[in-house]
Length: 416
Image (tube, rainbow, N blue to C red; front, side, top):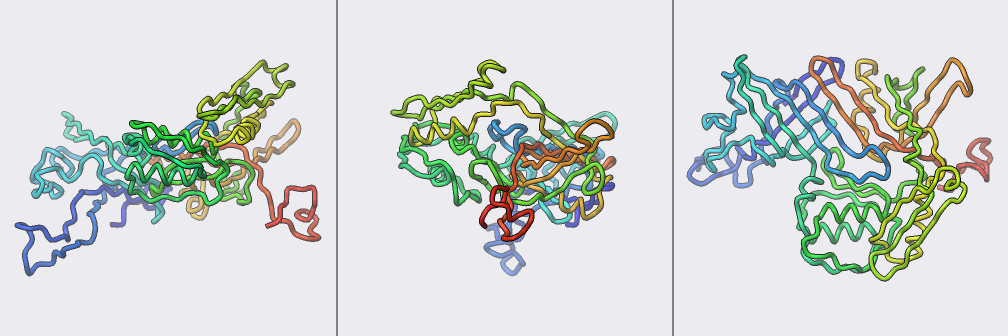
């Protein structure tokens, strides 16, 4: 399965699982001296790229204080009415499962999208819609989501917990939810969570969002559908994966600047879930200028009042600052090397963006940014367009003795 070329984009492969392993041995179906084996070779995937018109992927979040919902993908397909290969009503389809008497292409089947061998999205089909038209075409709309969707459908039994890190709590929650997906949890979380019993019937993803609010990191499914948890957002040692600019480097065609009063937090109230007292941090100067803008968490999973006070201080954002919040680019404007680096970029990666001006001061603005969300719009006739949603970050560099830039004691260099 080699997929199909998309104009100015590269080679794309969209694969949909049939839920069936054609190499496995099935009683009353396989031949004893045939090629089928007991274990098979895995569930079959079919290449549906040649019949695709558009693919839209949306992953992550737009703003740093938003919670993470499921990453999603939607696919539009059109085929002649005479082509019933993908029709769930067609029991003669090559993908119809005669053993279970059910369509092979159906909801909750795995689906995955890749470009030049690098995955851009992996998840499960949530909806498989079909529409016959008088124009002689059958249109399909496939909607898919990653495993955050699966977790948002699950509920927890009553579960006792101990004081533990946020990553250890995620592990306990996933165990209680009998989640079998792959995970990647940070080894150095910031938050220690309290020994609060999880009530029976608690939604799994709702509870994960509470962990995320305590840690203030990121909990999301990666482009390969690995449930990923990252520590509290702050400074980073990561150099930019992509350097965007309007003169050289990787070009963009739109860049959005947010300068919004609604981003101001000058009063933060945090109360831990049980036995705590309200912990407050505020900025009097900001309150005098922008009125009181409060962020409140009344049921924090943090284990102590001291941690709650630290979180309250962390959440303060007293002055609105103009910042780059999203960048968009079309692959038609990129070199092959630039496409290869940009396409598989992941949530939590660092990028740099520079905007140049012909008047005013300064004549150039550069910001370092963390990737919070990723959108792909792939049109087989128009090409591939990407949008990155970002938050500000500070890059720290390793301290280098005697270096005029990285050897300054009061600079932004740190001991490796």
